[in-house]
Length: 256
Ligand SMILES: NC(=O)c1ccc[n+]([C@@H]2O[C@H](COP(=O)([O-])OP(=O)(O)OC[C@H]3O[C@@H](n4cnc5c(N)ncnc54)[C@H](OP(=O)(O)O)[C@@H]3O)[C@@H](O)[C@H]2O)c1
Image: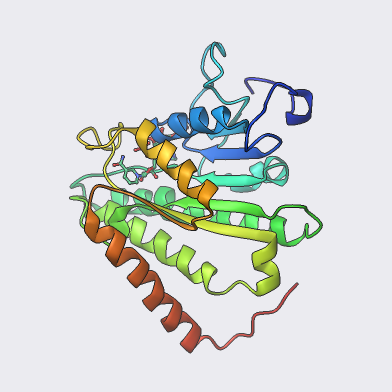
C-alpha cells in the first residue's frame, strides 16, 4: 500500500466527494490515473486496485492514497477492502486487437468480463448486507462504446458486449430496496488515448472530468464519446433490454 492512513485521518480532503472512499481497478492505466486525479480533486479517498506495483514514491496529490495489489481470479481476497469502499469503479481491461485465437479470447473474456462479473456479485452482496448507510454504495462499470459499436477488435467487442449485458441484467433485476443500497452506473466511453488504444481521439483527462461531471449530475448511463450515434443508440438499447428482461423474468424480485 502506498499509504496506511485513512479517510478519517485526512481532514485536509475537502470537496464534493470528501469522506467518500473510491476503489478503482485498472488504476495504473491511463483512465485509472486520470480518474484518480479527478476524484482526488473532488476530495475523494482513492484506493487503487491494481495488478501493477505502486508508484515508487507518492510525490503528488494526483496519486491514490492506498495501493492494493490483486489479480484476476483472486477477487475474494479483496473482500475486506471492498467492505470499506463507498464507490467501486471497475475499469481494468485489455484489447487483443485482431488476435482471435481461443487462448486470447479466453483471456480477454476472463479479464474484461468474468472478473468484473465476480466483483459485481461480490460488491452487490456487501452492499445488500449493509442497509443502514446515509448514502447508497455505488458500483460503476466501464464497459465501452464497443458494447454496441465496432472497435476493430472482435475479441474486445465480444467481451465488452457480455459485460454490458450482464450490467443491464443486474440493473433490471434488483428490487427497489436493493436499488437503495447500491446504485449501479455504466460508463460508455468512446476512443481515448492509452496503452489499450494508442490512436484514441480523446484524452483520458477529458474523459475522466466528463465522467465525474455526469456522475455529479446524477446520470447512471454515463456516455462520453465524439460519436453522436452512441448517444441515441445506447439509451435505446438499454430500454429494449429492460423491456425484454422484465417481460421474460420468472423469478420474483425478493429483498434479502
Ligand atoms: N482507451 C479507449 O479508447 C477505451 C474506450 C472505451 C473503454 N475503454 C475501457 O477503459 C478501461 C481503461 O482502459 P485504458 O484505455 O485506460 O487502458 P490502459 O491504460 O491499458 O489501462 C488498462 C488497465 O487494465 C489493467 N490490466 C491490463 N492488463 C490486465 C490483465 N491482463 N488483467 C487485469 N488487468 C489488466 C492494468 O491496470 P492495473 O495494472 O492497475 O491493474 C492496465 O493499466 C478499460 O476497461 C477499457 O476497455 C477504453
